[in-house]
Length: 157
Image (cartoon, rainbow, N blue to C red):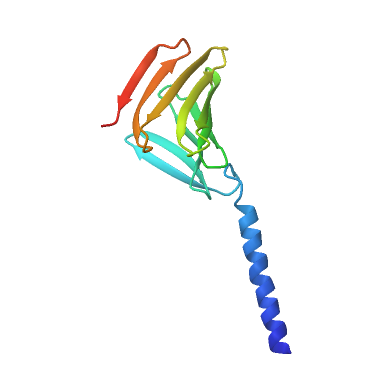
């Protein structure tokens, strides 16, 4: 009887721990449980915060004028980067949004829309269209601005 009770208690304890851990790690934008990473390149020092999903949640560095520039990164549920907030003491905040459009039947990315808005109210938009062959192999991409002007083309041979 004692042995069965002990086995049940151990099982409940293990299940409780595993449920608790999985609930804690569901938010891909978690900024509470982060590791600080510092990278030095010459005199330049950049500090990153990386969460438990190994996603960078923020970065900061001091520019040549002594001001601190920082960025915050936000992800969707599939861990795709969808927002970057760039801050500095001179120009304020700039927002960068990335919207991904996928083909529902095969889950291929067909388009990415990159839009920005800065603290002065300036808005810009770039669109990248992806082209695939009948077998699903990426053939190329075309990047256009908000007016439809082609900025870049790429072909995959």
